[in-house]
Amino acid sequence: MAEARKRRFRVLRRDRIRQSLSDMGTARITETAAQVRQRGKATLHDRLHRVRMSLALAVQAGLAAGLSWVAAHELLGNPQPVFAPISAVGTLAVSVGQRFRRTVELIIGVAVGVAVGDILVHFLGTGPWQLALVVTVAILLTIFAGGSVAIVIQAAATAVLIVTLSPTVEALEIPRFVDAFVGGGIALLVTAILLPLNPLRVLNRAARPALDLLADQLDAAADGLRARDRDKVQTALDRLRDNKAELATLTEAIEGAKETALLSPARWHRRSELTHYAEAADPIDRTMRNSGTLIRRAVTLIEDAEPVPEPMPDAVAHLAEAVRLLKREFAQGEEPERARERSLRAVSDAGRAYAEGVGFSGSVVVAQVRTTASDLIVASGISQEEANRMVRQSFGETDRPGSPAGPEPEVKQPTAPPVG
Image (cartoon, rainbow, N blue to C red; front, side, top):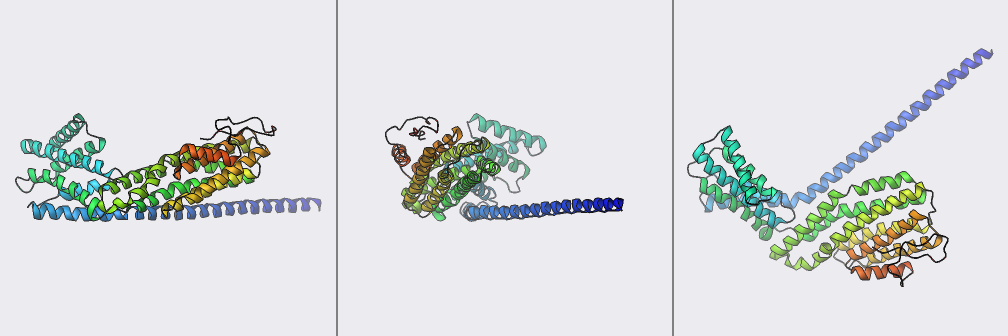
């Protein structure tokens, strides 16, 4: 009887273990499926965002290609103006930001490739070794002339086209050479006169990923501090560190918008509105880096079991909201006053947290809240000196602007951490 009960107990235990393993497997499958769905949505969202960002550029390239063909074929009488649209599309496809300089470089590269290819093919003919020689000469010539990487690549690629697409019409060397300039010139005409982009719209779209990334990770860090969830804060840190693409897109868009406003008469009235973005590029970059230091120290704070005063996560969350307000007010062309106010509110909460008592890493978090807030205020259009003064006043100490991080928490009147 006892033996039968033992056997039943072992069977029940095995069943429970199997059920538990089955439940764990089901949970993992469900979690994995949810992650796959989330990634699919994120990927679709990113792709649609890239399409929206590139739609105007695609229309510009199509218009430039059509007009360059008409100009070379109808006005110059070239029966096969292949290189005019190639040059036009090439100048636009890789010229977002610093468009004028890159356009000139690509025109030069195409012209060099056409000239070298036509001359050598005229004397040597076509074939594998001729192709190798033409590409080598085109590259060496552009490097000797001090050409950039864009010129070298374009010259070599154009030389390849010259050799591999042997002419079917006699005496096209000069038209091909001219086609390169016609296509590049039409591209500039389209971007500056016929179909200039709205620089503010381009900047708003380009700034959104960088500022959303920063705000989201600051929010995640604030939540992690409240819950003392080290993994959540670490994940926010890892994601924020991977910000090169977002910052590069924003920087390039700023340069492109400034150039559009300079070259396009239809966009000259936008120059003053671009000032905020142009001056905000460096402070936003500093905000990213200082926020990374803040979040990294928050990880250490949790690992070392240091105190987390209630106002500390609130201060970090206010920084996140200040970033969102800055993005919104920039997009609407408004003076970013609300972003400044929220930044100072973050500093005020950081001062309260410091007064309640923090450890070593906590004092660094407080200092980085101050520095990040100062960067955001500078990005809003305030001078660095004035931003530092506002931060010190909001923190609660105006007399010692250059004071160090401060003494241990038990001191009743701690010295304020430095401002960036």
